Image (cartoon, rainbow, N blue to C red):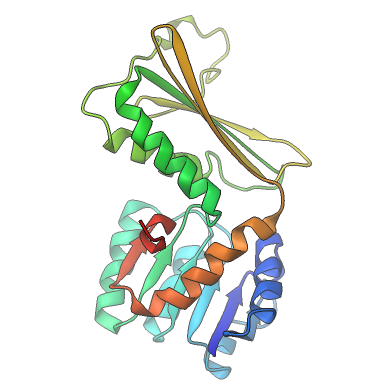
Length: 245
């Protein structure tokens, strides 16, 4: 049994993680950390081995650093960690002999969507991403969209073809420019997590789409990360690293 503590346990994702852990015969829900009660120290009091971090962009780095400093492995689903933060946490991992797993998206289908988009990227001239989430999501663009754009850019040797901003009648109407990939963020009530990648070249377009219709879609990936994080080496980003080829 792996003793698990959930940080952000009262939130949408955190509460779903708690239900998943309670229903998994290999996991034990040892601690819940909320906004005002059950502080991080409760992870130590309850001998937590793996923390699952689904708090907020503002608190995620400090929470993960605290866990590592106290010898607790961390699985991170909250967004907000920048490249410098990841480097700092990786160094802390190696100092303390514990590991961190970070996933922009825990849905298996979303990971495949990103993989397919990266595979297609060298064969098209332009690309745009449209991501849609519920109205209370704090960050934009989503971590999934940023990760998708990064993987697509890594797969290319040439710059994307993109129209000029000079004709925009409203500022930022063309979305955010992420290395030549335009990213558009929608926040619509009733949504969970949805993303389209649209690639184009002369005479054709390719659309790759993934929809999470319920937060239960993320739970197999979270469970896999909890069970594998102790065997990793330092900090690892992306669920694709835990999936069989």
